[in-house]
Length: 365
Image (cartoon, rainbow, N blue to C red; front, side):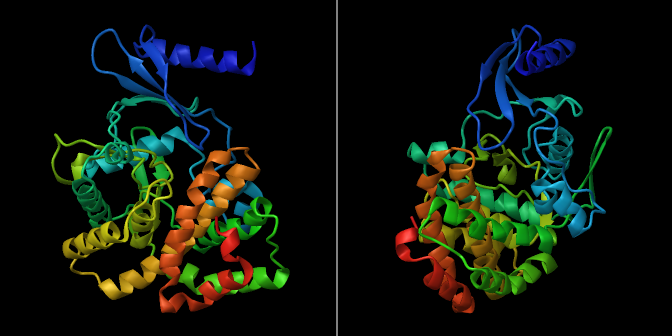
């Protein structure tokens, strides 16, 4: 049998073992990851979600004791502190989120070694889909902010646990933040051949980001979902408060600065978040967290938001040029607009000057 046939046999055996061998299976559309999903329709009971993350499809995740050198040898996931799609990470994070009163899917069965899990089906009412269909976005973003506040007020554990699983919640540290920022100068010229960054330009880039990375690492104090945006949030209006936000794609969680997930939500690569909606969301956040200094938070939000945006720009350039996924190019003009808004902060004048010097407006498309 070929690899696909072998994998299908493993999946079928897993489903049969747990009583879903006769369930109808409907593939769901994927994303940029190595995971695949199907919706299961058992003869009796509600639909379920079947997650398939083939083991060894990605480089290894970061060991908690790994040095920066160790991480460089292990590969991108270790450098960036990504979970490599690991099912045990997903299960452990889901259990912790549910313990906080948040709506992660209930895990009904899993096999971490084989990379398989069956989850509660939270439905198809993604925030992005509902808003595109005309639903008022205000209550959705208000609930999303309530969810972030719940995450940011909880004590971020060192280890996330589930039966038989202990998964470390690592800091989004300077090495990971540097890895994030360095994707753009490596990959943007491959998408935009008119660009060329000299060694001096790259050295200047690194020097500009160094204090921002340090602020991000020093402020790594809260549980960070890391992919908190409208295509990963599901509206559950029958639930209450922050639990109205169904959470997906959280296995890469880290301990990070609270501005990081805020940037993911409000600098959404896949849909326009207006300046008015951004301001309203931030105002709601500050009202719910009166302990914060809004001016300091906004300075960090602009700086780390800029880092997050250039990370995504670099990833999209890589997806287009290396992975042959041209659709990601369509998201990049929106990201450049978000970046311009962050760079309007006078504290980021050196970074703005770098882009003005090395990436002309004609290349920001």
